[in-house]
Image (cartoon, one colour):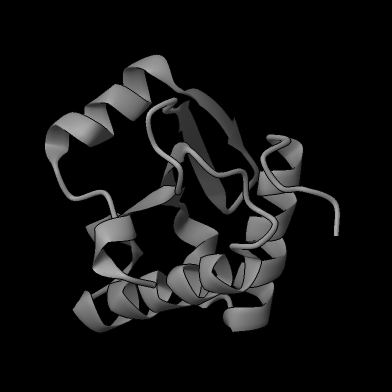
Amino acid sequence: MKKEFRIKKNNDFQAAFKKGRSFANRQFVVYSLEKGDQDFFRIGLSVSKKLGNAVARNRIKRYVRQSIFELQDNLTSGNDYVIIARKPVAEMDFFEVKKSLTHVLKVGKVLKKS
C-alpha cells in the first residue's frame, strides 16, 4: 500500500474519532469517516504497546496493511479508516487477521459484497 494512502497526522486521527462512525468486534475497532473531496481511501493504524514489543506490533501492522491491500477493490472509496488492534490480535496469524478484519468491515457496511 502506497504511503500517500496512509493517515499520519494526529488531526486526521482525531477527526475520525470525533466525527466518524465506529464498529468493532473482539479483535479490531474501526472508525470510518466519509470525505467527499477524496476519491481514494486512507488507512490509519493504531497498535498499542500493550500488544507486545516493536517486532510484534510491526507484524500486526504488516498483516493489517496486507489484508487491506487484498480487500481494497471491495472497500468504499472516499473514506478515512482508522483501525485499532485489540489484545487478541497479538496471537493471530495473517489469515485470522484478514478474516476478522473482513468481518468487522462487513459489520460496518463499508465492504462491498464480493
